[in-house]
Length: 406
Image (tube, rainbow, N blue to C red):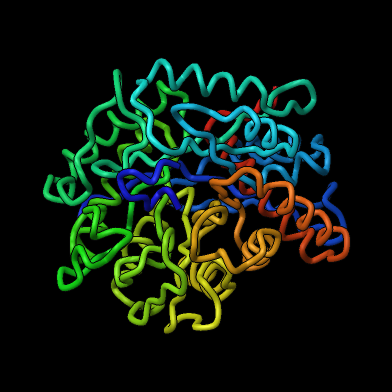
């Protein structure tokens, strides 16, 4: 996706304390309406008090219960909006299909005030439920170095992750908090960072998606773990959501899934050291994890990770205990998924256990939404999975202050 873009594509440290999403999963199998709910804290040590858990559950359930069917399905999608020159036709598609999250893509040098004006315009058009807007998750790629979507007045020039990895963890946390506050001032509430991929020094810049652009914090799992946690901690301090990516790791591949088909990792295992940064971040309460488009032959050789229940349900959810939002890497323009019909991209990801479908091409949203609605109509198990996903996404929005609950 554009989170792994080249510069001109256009479109043992301290543990981080992430904003901990409280998950409210409905157990009703036959309907997306009511049902009993069970709450789960992403990290027991940072779990809110019982009263807070109850309030969050009530808030999410209240908003969910008042939503229409199309509004609920729309929450499952994130569509791209060009950060520098938004395409109003594409924005209209997002509105028409009730898309609940946007990704600011490409490059903008307009600064925080201009970006905030753009975001405010998007938020003003967000869906209303019971007379109140359900705010949009507004994300971007603000890693640093070659991958920094937003710049200009009010934004720091962020160094590469490889440079960040040479800093002390306390310095990185402090700097990351500044970067997060800048995003918050621009109306951005979700960063698709930090990169938790471990690129071995033996591969280095021959790793096309990460190493070529110095996007890794270092060449060992220990350095990447400590510094991805430090980066996350800074964002948590500023109350901006962050995302561990690209699970289960893109450090051992050569091809870039944005531009290359059939990218295979033949090294990573479910117990390998490169899983450690993700495991550590999840234990600290990571709210979002992005799943890669590569295939991992030693984990699930038959499916791309983004379409694999072995990767998402078994490894990420069950083994690592992740309770937050699973977001896909780009299912719109990435060459890695070009042979899969757009409708099937959404269905395969959601069926594998994913929650939030990211597409940098909003014009694919209609086909994806229709496919999801059709599958829901004929499959009660899929309806239950969708319901759980919408609850996870709304819980993240509640954490970001985007839900009104009276």
